[in-house]
Image (cartoon, rainbow, N blue to C red; front, side, top):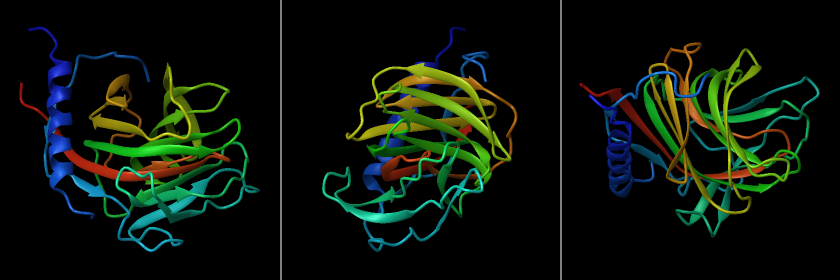
Length: 243
């Protein structure tokens, strides 16, 4: 039987978008056959609009990994008139340019292995690093998978990494247009050992890796001096569909 990946991914995207509409504000490249997925529970969307400006987002575990001399991350809710859900967004506001400093904001009450995570994100400023990312299967601030988009003049691209006890390994890369100062949609679908990354509705990466199979937290990510904003973080538990 021919592979049916596009139709299954399209069905999942449609289901997720339907859930968003009714929700309240609450490696190696392509090494295996396509994995068909379907929602296992209703999507949950965090819009940040009901959170206090200037404060860390409640329900999140905010921090960073990196060298000892790196400054702490500063995760806070800020006003943003241009946000996809106008009002307030989550921002990483500290511009410490220490290399290999990785701020993360993880949703504490998520413990998922098979999951679809999507977020609207915008790179506000930065130098060599002007990026944003989506995290899945996080044990803590030092161990997780992340799909990150970079918008700097050093290279516009999307990469997929694993971090294990703070050591980062690149699993795959896609090069293409990822502009700064505009809102993008970044999504990771994690099913078993297969990870599909979508940018602005286009599948850009598909990675196979078995290092971190256990359920974990999901969240958002930046690097070094990147000041980035996030809105409409949508978390959908998924399952492998029956053949």
